[in-house]
Image 1 (cartoon, rainbow, N blue to C red):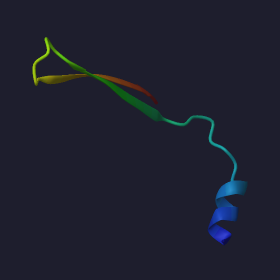
Image 2: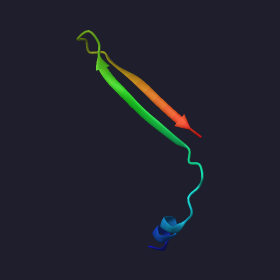
Image 3: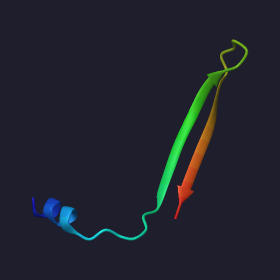
Image 4: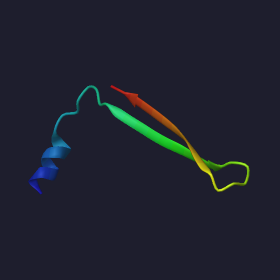
Length: 44
């Protein structure tokens, strides 16, 4: 488990990039058409 210990004890970076993704699925007018609204947020 030396890799785990090395990962846990290394210093943190000052900036971490991230991406957050989410979707809302909904049906339209009681039809069999499913739509999705996607939300994507990212920061560098």
